[in-house]
Length: 330
Image (cartoon, rainbow, N blue to C red):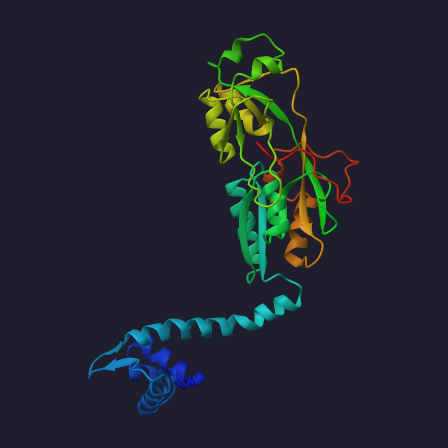
């Protein structure tokens, strides 16, 4: 049975100095040791590791393959040891070591997200933050089943179960759009279901994996074209590939440019309520901070809220395990 090497921390520090400086004498000056003391520690480290770590000539010092690996690992260890006290202090203050943010595709804004992440990193430098996207029930699916810790734009004003709390953010208002060249652009309004049914409904596919997927809008017997994101959905509408509803705020630019036209339908789509959602157990300081940004409509939160009509004053902060309303799919 092979013996596990005993890698002395001081010997590792000596090795890192020699490896980085490529010189025994320079390492000796840096560590205030004699050259012979440096050589002794390196030899002891190699004996303990059971492999050569350095190749020495009269003029140069180079690393063996094993030495390259050890330099990488040892440097990581010493960097970690320097930051460890601050990480422990952060943990003691209730700051999460990792946080997964789930963003509804309807509210995603790349510039706003990068600014928010930069701000959070500055305030909570030792928290690892991951961002995921969700469509409709995919937001709740990430929170319930996949480790999501806070959802920006979870469908509904009510929580999906008692393990979560919600903060109503507002409602998505929908407009029915077609390309200017589409046959429906010339038909008399309001357009009834029989007029809409012959043309494919363009929808962004629900990303839920464990919870039941929902369909945004499709009439019985109507063909459906599923796309991965809102930008693709808008492009498909502009090319006349299908029909459907878009968030009013997201459709505004295309309507002004004339690449889409709005049409009145007999049965318009109801507004879709969206919330900030988070697990009530284990929520830490970063979660609370993000909640505060959205609750006070801080400038960092406003770009995410811009596609929304503010919620009614009577909207509840949380529910009693009610099913979320139809919301969140484009």
